[in-house]
Amino acid sequence: MIEPGVLHIIVPILIVACALLVAILKDLIVAVISLAAMSLLLALEFYLLQAPDVAIAEAGVGAAISAAIYILAIRATKRR
Amino acid sequence: MSKIVRTMSSILSLFIFVYGSYIIMHGHLTPGGGFQGGAVFASGVALLIVAFGSQNLHKSLKEHHLSILESGGALIFIGLAFGGIATVFFYNFLVGSPIFGHIPPPGPNPGDIWTAGVIPFMNLAVGLKVIAGLSAILLVMALATTITEVEE
Amino acid sequence: MRKIAMAASLSVFIAFLIAATLVIHPFGYPPSQMDDYIIENAQSETGANNVVTAVVFDYRGFDTLGEATILFTAVTGVVMLFRRRKKE
Image (cartoon, rainbow over all chains, first blue to last red; front, side, top):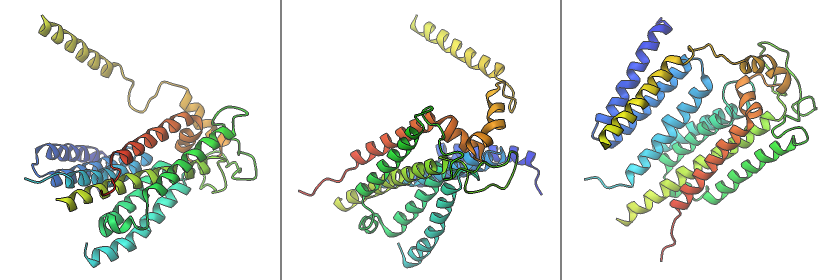
């Protein structure tokens, strides 16, 4: 078993790594998927901080709806 | 999308809809509420849009029906808020009455669905509003981007 | 002259941020009595076991009304922006 104190260190590092990947990556679709992964890890961190309401909202809106809207907006642009 | 994706998403979306409805209706007992359950429900609609295509889904799900549903949710919410205007705005006037009026014992307890007065109705109204609003946004954006693809 | 003013205002802003971070109260120890009142009386006053929902829909109902208005405005704007034109 992993202790919760260790998870409080691992999960924010993963969140920052995913956020850096969003800024670094050139492919827009991969960047959106990395953003969704960051949002899901953020929901996990909210759950670890004992806020399950915010975790459900973040997982629903951040990981599903906003990723879908970003992908729809990218589909409307032209790829060079 | 292929037939495998369509079959799996049509099965899976039912479970997502049931889970979203559970989060909305048990908002006064478990974590969650109208906004969270509506977001989960709308993610199921997003899955259906991705799997079946927005043109096919638009045959059974029109955006003006969704906007009527959203305005209805907002009207129910404001009407329930005006229901307690005899005391203050947003007064919980159903506590103690026979409809959803039980008062739970203080302290941690497993809870009872027949409690909390006006809060389940407000959860339902906000849930309807969020479901209709997010589904309308996704459907309209998907339709608009498909049409630009066809025109090219 | 303009650069000096900009640097001065920026340093004042950064100092304000650092001071606000230093004087913020510690995590998990709020200084107000309102939360104690809500935790004590939410179950008997609203009948909801979930105190967060009781706060969102009963004690702070105006906040939820504002949130609903924001969502309504956003949906109206998006539907107006992406309204399909009739084919001419």
